[in-house]
Length: 582
Ligand SMILES: [Zn+2]
Ligand SMILES: [Zn+2]
Image (cartoon, rainbow, N blue to C red; front, side, top):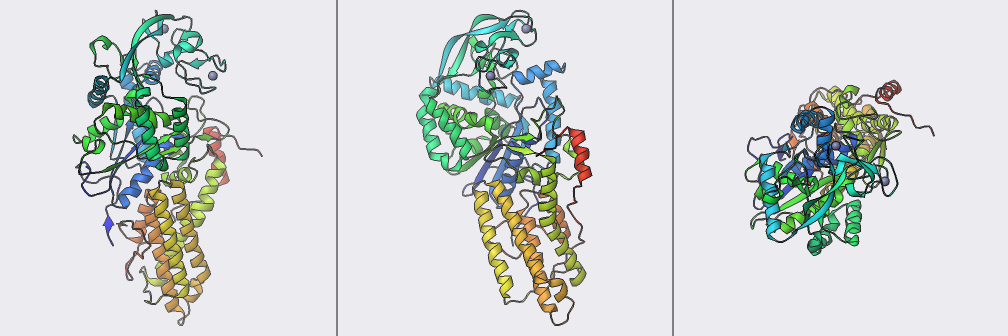
């Protein structure tokens, strides 16, 4: 059997680069804003989903790189910095560290986790901008902007508040209304006011801005959609189709702000790029921080092919399927475009939305306080991954998934199987007979077809389905264990040879679970492998026994504990949940 290194990410200090003749997989997850603490929705939507795929991809032996980092520019960051009496870089430093710790705890295997406020970002974003400019894809327009005389600046996006023109919510932000979700521009707000000086009614002043002409790029964006839609999730396609149907309009890519990437044209020296033009370029600049040879990952060459997989939440779809590809297509420099797009819906917290300010919900930095291992959280989140509609996190569901699935199915099977082998076969994988017993043949056939289904699901990035198949795999192994009555057979001299065969297959089931579950629960699998005393094998398309007869295995220890009613009552009090009364 081929083994691969336990991973995390690439163990060598050399960056991974695309290789000729290999399957080169570039994975990104949406760059989390670094002005807040990530909650469970951020985790499942972006980093955790991408991590599962990255781990799967490495396990198959694909040449893989997984890039992410915090998104630092934008008015939301500036605003939060002001509220915390910090400069934007200080704020980014503070929250960037919280993000890092949280992703570490969740065992996320980035090859590089960077950030966007860097010289590389300036260099690459400006390069792309200038190419768009040279291609005649940028147009200048004079616009009326709100200006606060007390602040002495234009009020972009979130620096202005007012009444929503659609639903009349009195406190809509300049970029979006939180109540009706409509995207807004500040001048559309009724009764606008400066976000800092609420008593000030800002005045209109003219300012010149640059617009990316998406209308001109429509045919190429449509072509991309038609070529790739089979490998984009349904929600990705629906939103993209709706945007294309409505028609792409030129979109303003500059802002009158200081915190951002400067626009490299003399007449626009006091402006920066709009964060939604700038942020996706962060994928490139973060890769450039990882390796000088970042262009090998992001630009097509004659001798290597790279497939780009992007993971995001549904609010980010148009930026990834329309605006960012249009930017790269327009820059006309052979950029690799999105191949697979996996978009999640939202996860809500029982009885409401996650809100740090209101103390509702479990956040990335708090999950550790529950004392529950991160692999249980990963199991819950991946098992409830909101793929087709929003889902709700409830403590009852968390308890049920742990107790009835992870513990009752996988945890118990592995623990029982290893304990049984240790007790009756002296810590050794027993001998199997070369001729397969019909029960073993049936088990072999069933596990083989489940493994095939698993590979098909994961190749298509159907992560939740992949995890469900591992559960089915374990259910099938459990049934084999139970039906065999091996604990009775092992005690009689005449049936002991049969017990030995059964035990051989029980152990192979556990070894294979440690492999199939690895992308989902690497922490769990590492401990399971320590008990089995085995390496990480390369994941093949077909089911194979992994451990030789005579292989010595270690001590067995339960890896999953039951979650009690008292525990969830405590957490509900601590994190402000509401039990659903039906
Ligand atoms: Zn003001
Ligand atoms: Zn509204």
